[in-house]
Amino acid sequence: MFLRLVVCWVTVLRAFGQVVVPVEVGESAVAAVAELGARVVRGEHQVAIERMHPRWKESVAEREGGMAKLEEKLAGIGKMMVEQGVQLKSFRPEGSWTAYEVGLGKELVAEEGRTVEKMIYKQWLLLIPTATVYRIAKPVVAGESPGFVEITSHGFQVAISDKGKNDWTFIDGAGVTVPELRRLFITLPDHLQLPEIKREHKEVK
Image 1: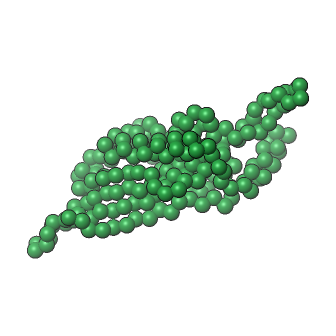
Image 2: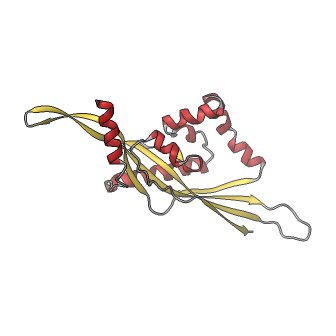
Image 3: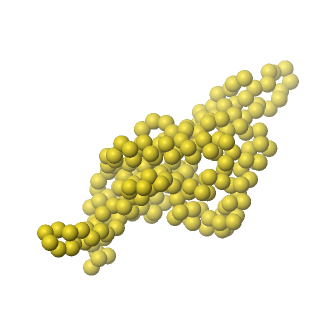
């Protein structure tokens, strides 16, 4: 009976799109993304593991052959960037975010002198667009001035927190698809659209 009720609720709830969240919730999520970006720019790549959404972390670790291998891979990112002459200049939120309620669960509440069970959402999920700027040294060519290619990568972070806590974990938009998000959060709407991922290049001195 309960399973049929959940299926019915999911079908109904998927028909609804994004929601309006309290201003302080949106500001908290954006600030958390900005802090994540600042730490990554400082070379603290381990934060990508520390603040990764737990269920997504398990999925990624499984693909990489275990948590130890995933951590080893992320720990080597800084060294790889240095070897390839890549400088990470900035990582910041940009533009407007969208929000959804997820984490369907049950709650006991008192109504008219009796205790009843209600279906509720327990988590916020925000899609927050980001801009990451890299700089790569151009190959040295005789007769040409040295310079750099600056790459601006527009992507997004999926920020998730239990309601009332503002303790955000993240899924990097570059590595997730709509079907994968729906498997993790079954009440996301069928018409879910993710922020655009694109890159811009320009030469700088």
